[in-house]
Image 1: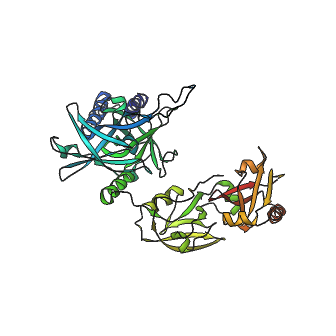
Image 2 (image 1 turned 60 degrees about the horizontal axis):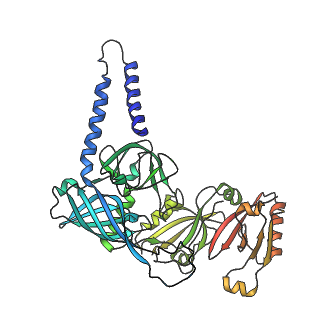
Image 3 (image 1 turned 90 degrees about the horizontal axis):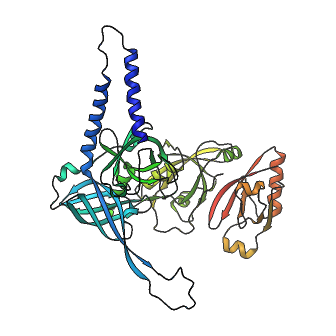
Length: 464
């Protein structure tokens, strides 16, 4: 409602402004009612065009529960869990019709684990659906329905737009089935682009203030031309006007992968990467690019000679914007393709050619990234057994004082500090010697390469 009111006021202000600027003589005055009627007429045309493409999806999952688990009983005996059906509700959009089959895009979380999926096309038409494939890493799913008995299929196919051309501030229309209220329409604007909210592995959401509620998931976000620019996916429940949609270019790529391969085949380098924060930029003297924190042994990046500490600034000659840009670009690269990475290594620019591999189903040691005197540190040397087990050289963080510079930098007990400003350390004495030399040089921060669990991460340690 708030977004619609704002749009109404915007049109009014444009009309009033135009009337104020028009000469008193020699020019026809603008009819404000006519402008509003024109805007309203065009909006309803778009909605009428797209609404038949939007469907309601009912998914039935079977869940287990034990009715006695919350009771403190005086006796215990084995009980087989009860099984019951749970029905979830979502939306979807028809995107393809081929060989008597209708293909519908929706969210993975709408149909995940479902033993039965039903699609409602209108109040009188429901059909069973088959899950063609799902992709939890982007929260996209493709389902299939037999077209027999569905009228005007061709007219129901939604037109897909180009989400790369979406701009902040443009109008956005969400259509879906919130709380089962079929084909509900809300209007707003594109509030932001390339958002990451931490719910899937690959994220580059379109943010909108068009109202999205439970049940909208899987429905389309469209532009004023009636083109689908996103798949509505998530909201921030504690806020207002904070909805997120998967860009249609990403959703379309995932769908094509599922239809062609039955799964999503992704390109893979085998590196852990992180943004260059202001603190890291000050420590290394480089303000652009993406920092390589770890190179996985035997990976394509390892075979090509990429090293920890390299800064990737371009892919195939194109400057990279951020970690997400590199991640999504490599993901869409066909395995076996050779790409050129432009990097900065020890202050020198060079190019490395890498043959992209296929992302394995499972990667041991899931990577994590962190942004980031008396230091507040207690350290000790690694024992020979610890070095053999961990496969690294370094010093072990025994404890970190709360509120200290070390704590604020992100260091935690159990971390292993392997390098200080790119120089290897194998003893506590070497660590403090390097720290003192940095202080003598007038440096206010030290860049640490840290092994945490089975992943590497760069942290910036303030020096006092």
